[in-house]
Length: 405
View 1 (cartoon, helix red, strand yellow):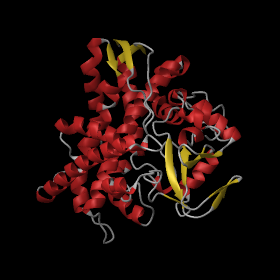
View 2 (tube, helix red, strand yellow; view 1 turned 180 degrees about the vertical axis):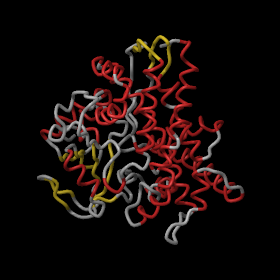
View 3 (cartoon, rainbow, N blue to C red; view 1 turned 30 degrees about the horizontal axis):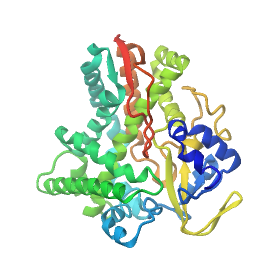
View 4 (tube, rainbow, N blue to C red; view 1 turned 60 degrees about the horizontal axis):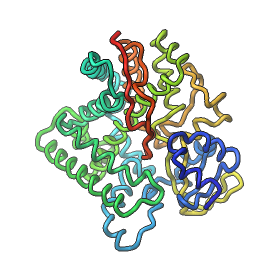
């Protein structure tokens, strides 16, 4: 077992990865993991470079590169592999550029600004549903239903289907949460993926017959510079948008509330000055970001520091480690909701910078302003909390108690 593999496999890493990140950054910033079968990067400078240089570090095949499977199983999971060889996050320019231009129409600053009132109404409704109880689970009662309602509304998905999308999302990303997924995990992820793909194909067909005012209709009709999305590209992109559009924001809001409760002085600063909600959101993204790691594949032999990455080897970019790099951030383990500058990598960097970042940056501050304006004496209902071990970093549950303001 490699030097740090036992620490990466420990339950304590799942609960708090940052001490391990610091050790790796100091002693082995470019580290080969036998258990994960890849190189691990923890320095901000190395990670920004490898995210930016798509010609040397490609997204093609990155999500299935570590799957060590017998040939019969490869054939059984061919639909999963095919899905993760196409679509917005799995290709590089020029295909990525073409697809991103088409999908970006729903995420322009103007389009996002128009949603503010709608998001404020959802926040108020969710708080109304819980306020008299004096308690809520921040995740399941608030930070999950808010973004899933918003992204589903944008895509034209009816409310009664929201729950099935949450289940599908969890099952799809399960295979990414472990370095070497078992056949059972792979097949479970594939079953959920096929179900979601068929759902979007059905909607795609309906929108061709009966256009609506939603993103899928826009994708059906979109044409830019003589190019448009194929049906497979559209389905793949919709899966990506739906999963990324609610999972990350769910944990951004919940993680932000959790770290505020762990830092009462910063909590008081935000209570006294709600105009800091945007700045606080950026610090939550840096300090306890919901998306902790990313992957690329080397297209040629290349040196990073004193190590040589061989062609076709996988690299794992620990965004959470980069966001605590003292070479980039002063006092990186301190929460500072007025931190400036704050060039964190929670949304990635380079060509694949998160398409939905403007939406998350609107939803989260609106959510925090709503919660802090309407709830007082917010506190943990209990401290027996458990972190997910999946691709997205967040608590499984965040129960709080409060009094109505």
